Amino acid sequence: MAAERLVVVTDPIDASALEALRSGPCRVLDASATPTELARHLGDAWGLIVRSRTKVTADLLAKAPHLALVARAGVGVDNIDLAAAAARGIRVANAPGAAATSVAELTVALYLILVRGLWGSVVSTRAGRWERGAHGHELAGRTVGFVGYGRIAREVARRIVPFGARAVAYDPFVPRSGDSTETMALDAVLGAADIVSLHAALTPENRHLIDARAFAKMRPGAYLVNVARGALVDEAALLAALRSGRLAGAALDVFETEPPTSRELLEDPRVIPTPHLGALTEEGQRRAGAEIVNEVLRALHGEPLASLVAPPGGAR
Ligand code: MLT
Image (cartoon, rainbow, N blue to C red; front, side, top):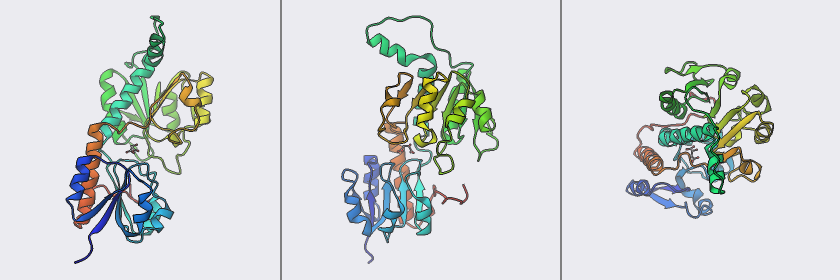
């Protein structure tokens, strides 16, 4: 009988998903608590289950001659060298919808905190002041401009329209939204939006898409919300836009380097920073674990995969 295939879990996944994986036709090595273990087992690994901590580089793949599947318990695959995986015939799968609700809810919460100026009120009240002057705005009547109009942005749009906000979007892969959101060119979105909300996958082409040029196109006093990937934004240009008053504030769940090495953005009073927790609700993680383990089990049983990620240049 052929030896059972080895699936290495390199980043923490939901406990019940791990249990379901252990009942599958494979050996499971949970290396999530000791990531250095991965190197010792790459030579035997048939499958990897990763989140964003493990960087699946061409070098790593070259050390895994039996690897057939990289399974990403989440949506972003920018930590996986898709071209190198495709060149080795390694399939990549993800769990694209698992945390859409969690990220969308966080996004709406950030809009409300930003436009209402709540962050400053919490800080000043805690400091013993009682500042009750009118400040902030309603979300009603604001325009939200989505950069990237995939699953998560659509979930956000669905939630903000009942608030009375208007939604516009730029997505080079989505010519028409199919809902009430009007699609337009990037500069038109930047010029129309009171809140620019980033939801694009990170690719080599859109790194620093939101740079000094983009900030100059934004409305004076606009807000930036980034719950997608830090490298979509040129952080030095963001800091300059905040300091010059061009931007009224920013809410950042993601940073170019995580954890961030520079404290300048973290300490700016106009910035609301959170530690990349958009997907990290119990529900989101339970779904991500279950979806990705089901995908691995399908692969082990030789069944077609539901969420194959296309290699660069492949069909989207
Ligand atoms: C995702 O891509 O699924 C989220 O950003 C969360 C993560 O990176 O793990």
